[in-house]
Image (tube, rainbow, N blue to C red; front, side):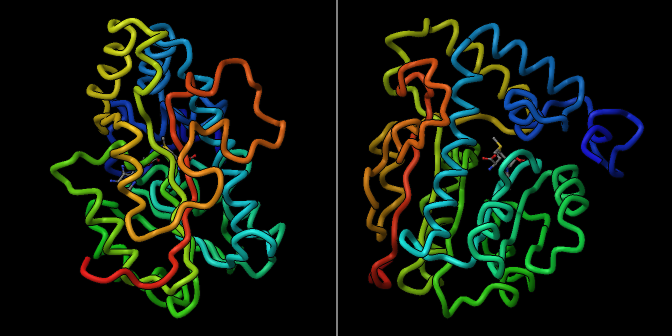
Length: 286
Ligand SMILES: C[S@@+](CC[C@H](N)C(=O)[O-])C[C@H]1O[C@@H](n2cnc3c(N)ncnc32)[C@H](O)[C@@H]1O
């Protein structure tokens, strides 16, 4: 299944294979098989310009695995329902595989706005009646929440984990990412969680030249999804109304490391912050 997405032999109707996508670039860099030639070209240019990109993307995916394991763990978040928006191509350590290895009844809804991703994820999870895959745009969060596979398949009276791994940096300030998160937060039961990771320049400017940073940003500008890197403070604000669990919002290799990260570079070179936070009670006045 997976090889086919990278060949012109299998392309869902209406897909533009002349523009790189964030899903394809990321999948190529983390060693997946779902990418088109334009994605590979953009990824290679990015890797040549900023050698830390590969380490950062792999560390981001590793953060997702650790975060989901902790969330599903009865001694951690004890969560049995996941809403993963910007879920990306299925690859090693998918959310449902990790969650269901701990709690076989765990329910997972994957949402992505890239139709190729949706088709691949549906093919991979066909037959798993505790997984749903839908097409949806984070920037139209109300439509996602109104979809029957989100509204009814998940039990909103019980805690849910909202997973936004490496996706919010494709949402501009004008598109009001704060409001998008608050919209989900206000529907969540107390005890729900937000897990997110987000690209940042903090610390990178000391080791990368402005040209290297510009190269990475340019590749994403060419892509369907422009990249918006944010500071620690700006990313921390996405957790308003939630309480961050230890160790807080940190560079992803520092979030509850389990020794499987390659550790090739200092954590700040990942260029990505990650955190997991709990909703104590419904915040007021939002
Ligand atoms: C860098 S990948 C991350 C994939 C996955 N979350 C992971 O961590 O492995 C970003 C994904 O977000 C998706 N995406 C970007 N903007 C989106 C939006 N506005 N709504 C839904 N999905 C989006 C892309 O199609 C891509 O699959």
